[in-house]
Figure 1: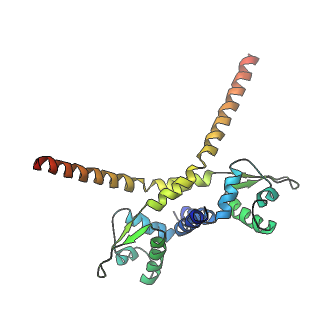
Figure 2 (figure 1 turned 135 degrees about the vertical axis):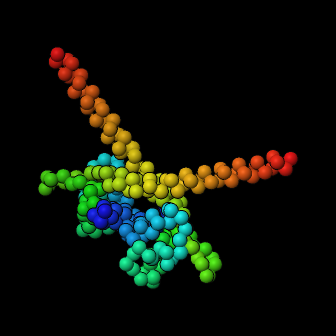
Figure 3 (figure 1 turned 90 degrees about the horizontal axis):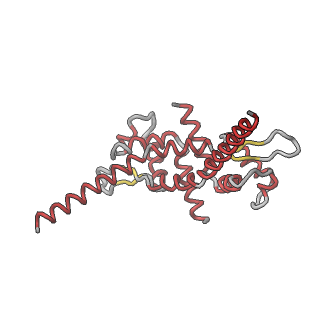
Length: 115
Length: 115
């Protein structure tokens, strides 16, 4: 449990940065080199590399081994872990809607009885 | 766009802490006071209050106004924002599966032709 908690801490923390989310959005269109990823941002290559390392550490980015040309690609498996976690709260929504339904039924029954 | 980015930064950052996620899990079962929320954790009341304030700031917790008894309750609307964001990456999964399907079809067609 502890380790799955640490893992979610790291994934959420990696996602809590708009530059890193923009890098993921770019990679969703296809693989790119670090230089290509840096282009749209007003950031130095070392700064972009740091963001990439953070995304790589949680498994959101994989980098090719070829030293000359190491394109980054997106691996969305960690996003599935996020979805799994948020899914646990779906029942809160659903029970809230059920209670609302019940309430509406009660009101409409009362109105019928008053007719 | 900027403000929606800041907002996601804050939500992801609020979720990047296992104590705060445990507080949300507790509140999914029903409202609770700060003292009740502090019980299962080896943390001081001020430390728990700080976590609650962070969750409150992003709208994941709402607190009652009554000064004597201010129960906290869960509001999962910010989690819907997270889901909306992760949903954007669903097509990456889907296109990956489609490519895999195509590949499997190609292989099985080749095998048929070789028979």
